[in-house]
Length: 249
Image 1 (cartoon, rainbow, N blue to C red):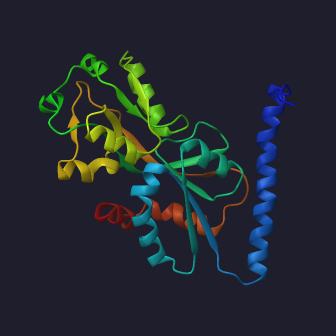
Image 2 (spheres, rainbow, N blue to C red):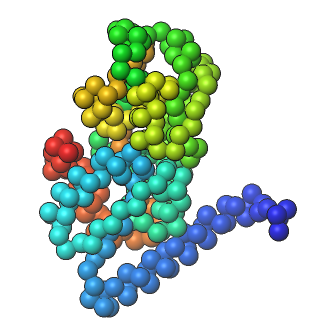
Image 3 (cartoon, rainbow, N blue to C red):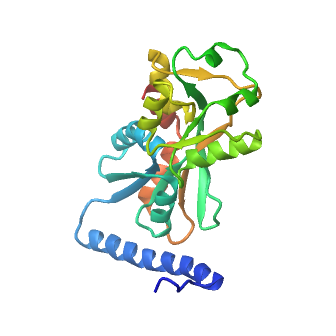
């Protein structure tokens, strides 16, 4: 019923149960595909920004090296992709922040630079360095809760002791369009806004003290055996071939 809640011990046990159930299901599926002689499968997941802007180039180039693999990609916010990874519904996740949980392992493979975007012609964008207190006067456009970009933005605002008004929008596209028409400013991964900046559809603000510096991570479950296809993709994203694919993409 609605009033029944697991204890702290129950919640901790549930994490292990989820791994066990997910591993058994995954093992059954892998064994079935091997027995049937089916092609190997690699199930990737990515947070929205990475899914939209990094993964197409990486997957295209990786498949040139491993054409025999059946590669799929699911895209969702941070909370959902890590839920899927914990349940062994996907093999690997690409995220803008390494997970805190010990259930996962991660390695950084590329820089994830950020930009504070605004409407073209914004007076703040014309200044070399903007005092951070001036940023509190503008509405901030943020993603939904559960998004890694949302958490990054909240951490940045808290670290600068800023409490601006927040407007929640559910996608990077909606945020970019809202910033373009002057509805507010937004902290966005540079890969998500570089095209609009290059075309003059958005402008950027340079706050005094700079912006957060982050990396892109590939993340996998620490539980269960690692399949060869999973290890191959982990190795690939750290390679020169992957760096060239991202640079050309």
